Length: 499
Image (cartoon, rainbow, N blue to C red; front, side, top):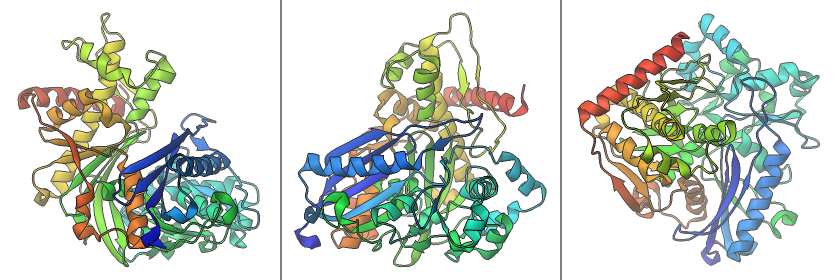
């Protein structure tokens, strides 16, 4: 029974790693297990995962967190799942076998198809129904690509023999032994197939992308009864009671339950969400309108800005250039950089996200001199994250001026760098709040499972689980911040124009 169960278990399946965190009823982490997730790049701009790698990593980390925390299945009131969004998995219902590698949210293979949608005048319909833009980032064109390029897939799909899902659905299917094919409203909202105002799969969008309705999962609340794990996986059945896309889970983990509150997560990419309340706000600045959560059948909405490359820029320094051994080195290197050098890295390795949405842009470095070295490149990589965040927040305040002054709550792996967070506060001219629990994505998933289990208070009184570790206040003169940002905008212009 929940009242006898001291733990909540969060499964956080990300782009480059999978982790499980065991939380106490006070939402303090008790144990963590993590595995790296390999990525595959079969062609320029293509990014894939092996679904079996995702599954095996999920199972291993769930078991690992339980073992480290000394938790039995009876000790767990519920599992919450959070996941990389938009990534597409297509599998056989009879066998559970994926028909192709998962196509990751970063993948750009459908850029031409999205350009054709825009040329043909379909983006207005897409934006009206889904709140999204016609961009390869989202699931619909990826799914259509699989149906058209995997031999026999479309015929199987039309016969109802295949199941589609974002990563949450695939993991739920496997965890329940194929008994449950479902998703939650936040993940459905990222497919470009879901009407975020009516809360249903949209027939007109399905026709536009030629997607058979038979392959779609059932859409449920973020806190719901999603089924039980099969006994052999964790030793006994454990209820699955929460599900949300990673950025929405982080928004809940950051306790951004009041309209006007803002969070930004810094992982592989960067994602800023502004709570806009019960009514969706249509962006005039190419931001996304999305579902923040759905609880008790009621939806709350957010404006979202998505940056494709944040921590991935640091990974490039390590894996691509080989100039650092560990991401933690970048902050110390940035401190040593020559302040007189204005080096800009525009990390458009997979195009530019919001507010530019330029799938054809490619990465570039500007301002290099003979004196530029490792330190200047490290600083440019970290600064690029702050510049992109400012672009997002400027667009958000233009769309939603009633949001007022910004206090940005931050989370994710990059926020451990004091240098990066201070530069972010300097560039924004606003406080940046770093919480005690930095893995707020997993925290949000655990909170949802606890809410469904009756262990957590409702959103209106749930902010007590959030605790401040440090507030970074701006120290840079506003004229200096403006000058630096102007240099960044010039670098972005050059990337977009191809000069």
